Length: 352
Image (tube, rainbow, N blue to C red; front, side, top):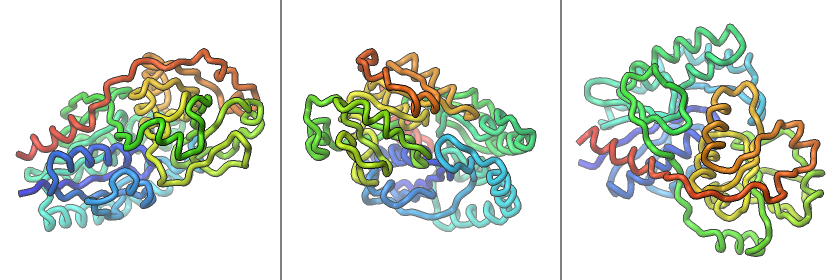
């Protein structure tokens, strides 16, 4: 019988979903008739550009993550309010989801990385996680005593997971009973550097940087800094004021790794999927610090050991001239990134 795989993504940003889609794509190649269902909050265009067909979607969300107004700002009160609402209906939610999984006869669940997914595991259907952090780690490091009980609650739920595929740049993740380290999980590019540049109207030899700050973007745009560097072309993934040296890409037109492969430098916030794909390409990075995000320190530390990286405060990025464009940041050898293939193979091995 073809494999039946159910995917649950944390309801936070885009990265949790895109790395699940990387695994789903490899699994589809290994087993063409498998049934794969994704639970995620992300827009349809993000799913379509990574896996255009052969994927079903449902809207069950098993966590909150953090409520943010942009990629750098957390609304703690709103986060706590939404988590309280989730916990109030968690028993009903888990019961309904377990019943659905049983009715549809799913073989296995892969979750990235909602704590409540641990409640879906049973003797017939294992639940495996995939991440470089758990929400217990994030909540534990928020300097607000109201999050301490949520960290303990999340850790307890993670103990229900059957196992964890631990990604690089990880915290200890000691709430999980069984841990298997895996290499970087990234998506594959469908098009090469020359093709992407041609489609974007960028000359092959023009210095080019990609500015991307995740699914939530950035509140302010550094228009003055862009204007100071007319010899550089800047590609952006969100709305920005028009400029002669600025190229805006439409959502869903490209996978992020395709844009990264087409540029000479990336200007990013430290999110796992973006960092992993920069490392997989050996691409130099100017990275904005994310104070208050515990995962960011792990990512910046790991990235800095593998690729050329300059870390900036948001204030310096907006107000100071960008000397990181002076040529001091260079490409390095790509980092092995076959984690999606390894996870897909292990999922099949677990249920066969």
